[in-house]
Every structure is written in structure tokens, then in C-alpha cells.
Image (tube, rainbow, N blue to C red; front, side):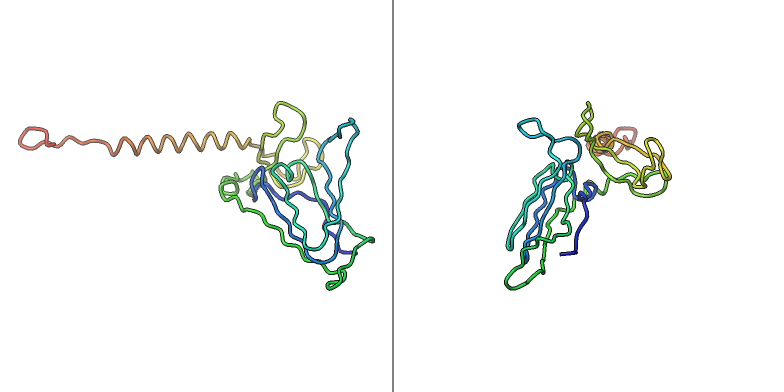
Length: 189
């Protein structure tokens, strides 16, 4: 009951944007809490601050694309723990995530020399939902960073990478530079 996992989101720089994650639980029924990032309102216009469910033994929860971006989740300390007839207060959880190599492989290096983290823009603006890479070092205050202020839009990295790939494909399609061979004063074919 005193064990817990604090509020977090799985890193999209590892699992990729809009990932589907599955969580399979066995044993005691623990509370699972979800907190929206930013302002989320219900059908009546009231602000939603959190959701919680008690995941029973042998349950599967599927977190659909967008969950990691727009919610933080946790397994809080739980004094109302529902014990299981065999495991008592014990609980075993398996979480299934896909490792997105294409995403983690394009992570730029920041000015600190570290691989950057991928994050979505959550503020309501023309960039909402757009992804960017930034230094993993913590921000001390608006505009003040622990060491560097690296920032790069992910779609710009993808665009530049696609342009390089197209240029390379065009070069391969043209073949090596042609050389006209002469034999006895005439081009050899």
C-alpha cells in the first residue's frame, strides 16, 4: 500500500509520438490515476483535474495514441488497496511499449553534448500538437536553463532528412558519372 509510482508520461523520444501502450495487471487492485496536461473540460464545461480507476486482478488497460502527450499517470500510495485472495497486497504489472528506433535515432545532440528529448507543444496555439527537440536539462525559470537552450522542430529534421534521402536517390538513379571511352578515335559503346 505504501509503494507508489509518481506522476509521469512515458518519453515519446523512445516510444514515438502517438504511441499505443498496454498495461497488464495481476494481483491486488491498485488505484491508477491520470491527470490531464493543460486544461481539459467535460461536456458541461467544468475543468477535469484527474481521473482514477482501480485496476483489478487480470486487467488490461490500453492507452491509445495521444495519452502520453496529454496525460500524466501514476500509481499513488493506496490505503484503500483491495487485496487478492492469493497474492494479498502483492501486485505484478507488465507494460508493453514499442521502441521507436526511427524516432530515437534522429534525436539531435544539444549544446551540452547530450541527446535531446522529444516533446509536443501543448499550449493552445498554431503549433499545438507539433513536436520539438530540446535539452533534457531542467529549465530553472522561463527563458533560464540549467545549461543550454537547444531547440529544434521535429518536422524540420524530418523535412531535411527527406530532402537528403531524395538527393541521394536521385544521385543513385543517375548512376556514376559517364565516361566516354575512345577506341581507335571512335566512342566505344
